[in-house]
Each structure stands twice: as C-alpha cells, then as structure tokens.
Length: 117
Image (cartoon, rainbow, N blue to C red; front, side, top):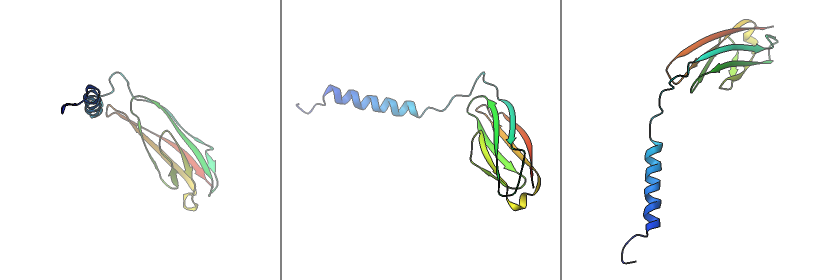
C-alpha cells in the first residue's frame, strides 16, 4: 500500500463529510404556503367529570406547531388531535384554545367550548 489510502476509503470519507455538512443547513422559510386554520372541534361537546372528549384542529400550511390550553381540566397529547380530560374541578363551561404557528412565523387561534357536568 505504500502509506496511501485506497480510493474507496477516500471516497467514503468525503461522502460522509458532504452528508454531514448538507445536514447542517438551516430550514428554508415556507414560501407560498399560507397558514389556513380551517376548524377546531370537540366531540362530544358535553361530558361528565372523569370522562374524555376528542379535540381536533384542521389546518394546512408548512411546519405546523400546535399549542393547546384550557380554562379548566387537562389537555392530553400533542399535535392536531388531543384529548380533553374532565376533572371534578372542571364542572361548567370550559374554553379549549388552539394556536397554530407555521414555518413563516404566522399564527392563528381558534377556541371551542365544552360543558362538563
């Protein structure tokens, strides 16, 4: 071998370096893809304490990030579909809020109401 590296070894090392550098590039903004928050629903919309309801946000856009909150009770899960858990302290009307942010730094917020008996 005379102290030289084989051609295949050099090619493999260069390939790994190129892949590493390419993987470090920053994500580009989402051009031409507006954030559209179509709907926010809860089913069922009336439940008893200790029960659960499905909550779904329908939206389109680029790199969507969902942020959930509720006046009383708990939100379980992440993403476009979560579960509302009705604790005993959640009796009455509660507001579930979803704010969606996209890759262009745009955001939209919708609310839906659920009654806990």
